[in-house]
Image 1 (cartoon, rainbow, N blue to C red):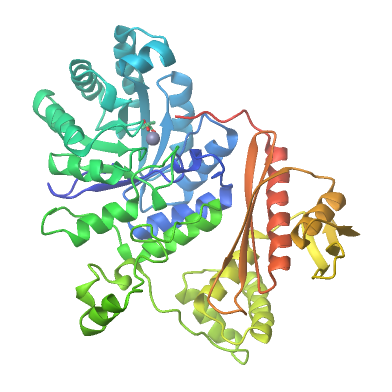
Image 2: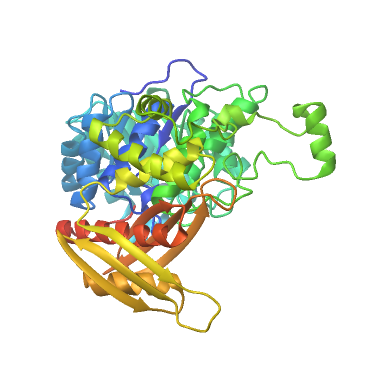
Length: 518
Ligand code: KIV
Ligand code: ZN
């Protein structure tokens, strides 16, 4: 069970894989969720909310697999207050060395009347029943009063007291709709600390949404009056405007420890890695001026700032790039580098690949080194990630040629795909080269989903940089994100589209009941 070690230790509860994944378009497949969970574990996250097991078979499987694999963090699943939800959640977290059930019900007048259509007395009873039932499976039970910030104080205190009496060890008070202001939210948490008689038997947690841009400020204000768990996500991913961003919480506490004397277990040096992974997997790029992880967060453009920085970095830098794992792009071996050095580099970058995967990645590294003068760490990460996501794909790109230019001829793409072991070729024109490629792939596969997002970004600088393309496709309300990387933007685009189609095929196979939201 996750417990506070000392009175100023803050439990970091990451919900990127649950609340984060609920943002429209941010859906992730099992292997992506596992990769993110492993990075969160390496970072030292105390509790990973891995999903909402009743929502779909895919969610159940993700929580269950992460519970089997991740041993360094508590694995938590979300459940509404019904027995069915809690049983499914308990089943999913069963393999965890340390597992938590997080059950919730709305307590605000608005939610009780319109969403739940329940009387307050029935909600109160549901709190007691759900927590009591959850305690049959684990000692680590969290209870949340959904829409907490708009809940009447007397009713909030009563339900919290009953939840703790029934065995809840963490009480989470969410600002579900991102409505609260920092001093107001802190006053509410302080009111709970002062009025609930058994409050010392539970950890008070906060879960703030960012609709008014206050999620991090509200969370930190709550810590100052006694909250000891913060629920947050990488890059602030989450429903609507998102949740409190973990990187901002962690670096806020670390950088201003003079004012906020609280500790977390987080290895901040892994923040950049986690941020990049979440943004690549979801296709949600990070705005350049985003605090901590934006591309400009440590860039100094104006002459006065640059001059100050050269004299003393502290003039304009309140934290170092190294503290979030942002290092100078490192030049790696060139095309003469051998397999052994390449394997060492993979280990240094945090990859633990089998022999075949190393072999594939090495071949792609050599191909890349032939066309790109300087190969950086980021290039290696891009080609390895690209190889990993293509594992066991049904559709593969064999050949692509694209013709386009200023000569008033429609752009044309000729391609050969391997579709389930069969070679298929097509030639297609389009409004642009990417359009021609995507039309050709649709023709050859017979799959024509709706394109929601097409996004290109350069892995490193320079005209020979690899392009990393993200494509989001939607079919019958299900969305998938595909990625592709190559020095040729058209090849990367084709790979990304094909990767998304492969994920769609897996989704079709697994076709599960439609997802619930919390
Ligand atoms: O925002 C919210 O209230 C939630 C709860 C399920 C904790 O996500
Ligand atoms: Zn939420």
